[in-house]
Length: 179
Image 1 (cartoon, helix red, strand yellow):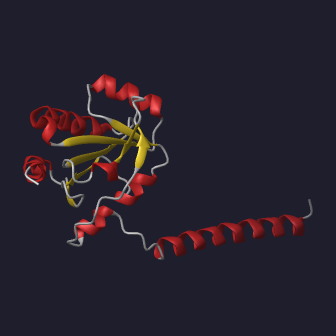
Image 2: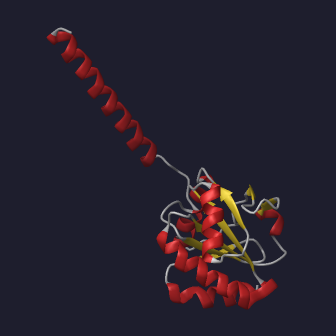
């Protein structure tokens, strides 16, 4: 390959990389989607975004919208590769035992392999149902990474909070259980 052909190929490669970076910056700057997490920070209480996903245990699907009006929900976004998720999921498992049938606890395994997720649940003794969000599309609607992310949904379907400080868990649970 001649020197001029090599320079042309390098120039084309640089132009392609610059163009792709420009496209990425434009997309991020013009992303008008606002996840649930940001809406809560803005003082809003949005309706929980619907999803209909397969359960990890193979017992059908969970359609979040169909639960509206029936009972309040704790939504736990987790993955088998997430070390902090172990602690949070175990705390939620203990809370589930305390609240019994008054509050629904639902895990959303995200950006993960379903086989790894099932093994993780067994290993850590997590018994509340979880669904599989392999692509992370549902997580994105709620605010994206990082995980764990835990949201509290009132019986009405409105999201009342996100667990930011560990000590807030009992307060949010009492709040939604009373809804």
